[in-house]
Length: 249
Image (cartoon, rainbow, N blue to C red):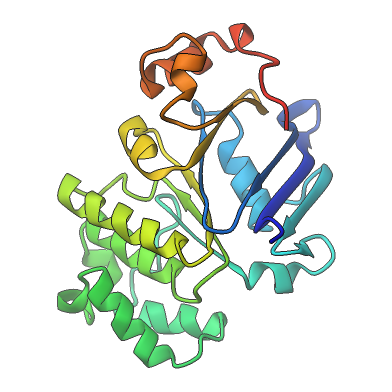
């Protein structure tokens, strides 16, 4: 099977500022890939290019075999996302939000799908509550339900459990793992290295717009003389030059 996501030599510049510098990577079906790095590394810019929010300055992005620059709507119909910085409309109830987005994605048997997700994410008590009055953790769960509405082939999750208590976060991680088993590719960003090690099959470390390292989150730290993934993260954030040139797409 071809990769669910293929990013080839993609760059993004703003004038003389390079936000993303010719990166290449792929996400396979059934694989969860962690996109890691300090703030300003280029992670969110990369995700926004994959989502079609930003147009790359160079390179190509192919989703499920479809070039996003040539067939944007067709490619994006196979994706969905959830991010802490993209809350759902607060004046709509949980069910109203899911129905609106389900109609946008043309989800078949939408009412049935909504009921499945309300149960899956423990949202039944809040079905008629406006999203604006929910706690941050409850809003995050609604966003994740929205992200899975259309059963996407590619799911992008930006800090998906940042506002959720540990027990709910564990449930969410289990849901995401099961979702990936249905041949869904997932690109996951997080600053919680313990979570990344538990969830991700592979990680990519970014710094200053480049991918510096890639590998299995359980073994990659030792390959670079670090005891833990958190120590490796700190090294990427503070001493990227000592790691530069070790990644090849």
